[in-house]
Amino acid sequence: MKSVLVTFGCSWTYGVGVGYNIDMSRDEYMKIGWDIDTCSKKSFRGLLSLRYDLQNINFAHGGASNQRQFRLLKNFLVSPECQQLIHSGTTIIVLHGITSTARNEMYFNEKKCLVNFKYDDSNLSKWNSVIVEHFYNHDNEVNRLAEEMQFINQYYKAVGIKNLWFDTFNHHQYPVDIDNLIENNSTNRDFLTYLSSSTGLQEFDDTYHLSSWKTDSTRVKFLVNNGYLNPFTKHPTEQGHKLIADHISTHIEKVM
Image (cartoon, rainbow, N blue to C red; front, top):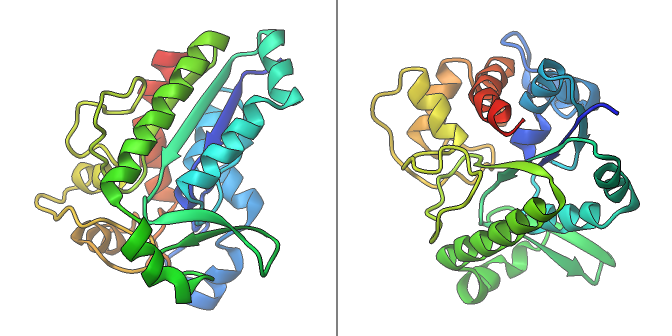
C-alpha cells in the first residue's frame, strides 16, 4: 500500500485561497477560495503528497482550532482505518500544524453540535468578552499544547507512526522541547515568519496573527504586497505554498 500523509491544521494546511490569481476580483476569489480539488492539489500538503508519492488523508479545515484538530486526531488514531494501516505496516507520516490559541471548540446547545470559533469573530460573539476575560490565557493554552504534543509523540513512537509538528502563523514558546517540531531551536519558527524572512523582509514585528483576514502584522502586509498571500483573506497563494512545501521537504525526508 502507498505510504500515507495524514494532515491536521487550519486553513493554511487545508489550502484556502491557493487558487487565487492576481486578476481575480474579490467575488471571483470567494467562489473558488475553498474549492476542494484546487486546495488538495495546490496546497503544500498536496505538493508534498505528489512529490513523495503519498496518499493524503486530510483533517485540516479552514478556521479550525487546536482543540478540534486534537479531537479529530484522537478519533482517527483509534479508528479501524488507522489501526489497519498500522497493522499492515504502511508508512504513516502525520503533519500537524498548530494554529492560533485564540480559537476554541465548544458544544453549542442552541445548535446541538460542537461549534468551532475564534475569540475575535464568532457565532458566540455575545459571549466572547466573557470567555476571554475569565477563561482564556494564551500561556496556559501553549502549556496545554505542549502536554498534548508530548503525549501524542509517545504514542507515535509506540506504534511506529512518523510525524512532524509546525507552528503555522505564530511562534509559540513551548515550556519544553518538542520532538519532531520543525525548526525546534528557532526563535521564529512559524511559517508566516519563514515566508517573510526567506523572501526579503529584513525587519518585522511579532504581532500575534489571528488569521481573521486582516493585515495585523508587517509580515502579512509584506507578503501580500509580494504575492505570497492573497489580498482578500490573507492566505498563502500558490507561490507561498510552493515555498512552504520546499521548506517542509527536508524534514519529510529525514523522517522517511
